[in-house]
Length: 473
Image (cartoon, rainbow, N blue to C red):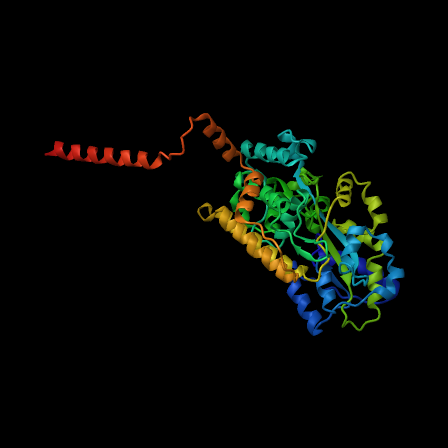
């Protein structure tokens, strides 16, 4: 898939070393991420145009492994040496609670907050000042209120994120949910996985993320964009902050003629890596990435040679430094930590998290995409929004996830319970101000004056109209 700038060229350069050593020629086929899932599913099931070595999104491995379409790699475990890899990355090589290995970690996609250094300096924003949600919100508000314009008239805003049309939508919500102690799914006391959508910590994390829109810190226009479009606007200098893949950092060091960003606005302004703002459970980043696997229907005995070559330390070091994603090897990461910018990114691996390695995760993720897309639709059109509709969305999708996991819940959160949690979790400065103003007013004794005011205005309008007619006569 398209990893970093000039993805095919960079991988072919790496494979030239392999061919020189082994005299085995290799052909590279690049699939866009948007089409990859369907294309890979089809080729693994049918055996048509089966590749010999295959890149998989790390969360995809359990799904395909459970269907028997990936080769079991246990016989090569001594050559692979699992101790070389970061534990959170090695976890993605197999199905949860299964000892069979179906893939080898290739690189890690750690997603921090990326900040524009020039904009941060202009508004006196420091990494320390935006360590928590409140500080991050204040930093965004500072930039928004600055009303700074770029040369071509675009307004610089503090923050933006993609919406319902995005393929990364669960990844975008995940760090906020995890940082407030929430989970998408969890094991019960009997070891059965089940939905955690309708739990207080998960709802609080969702509410904090939605609050950026509710509190008008982020424009609803961004909800029409996908990750690539938001990243492009950040690269153009239109946003102070985004949460995105760290490959942007490496791209600012590569010239545009080679697919990089050194001559783009973000290359000139410079980019910095910041942790996800702390919640009640700390700062937890989303960790994704890619693994390499061999399709079960591959007949080439040379495939394992290629797989082992691409995941050995020397190759990982060389390739990841070209594409900007973190290597999955602990030893190679030590050299990355010497880089002033990347050392902050490496530090995020200690607290970052990935999804559970479940065969059902592929379908669960699609349910989450549907759920969050429906939520964004409510927020896009204020007239459609209501807490009851929000509750129904969460309840429906939570039930679907439980069904996908074969779990029968014994208790369901009521709407009243949801309202109480939501009221205490959603952040809105405008609402808070209105509540303060209300407190200053005399108590209304429970009577709403609005209908009476309307009635008086109606009567006065009638009298005024009648008087004008009398004068004309």
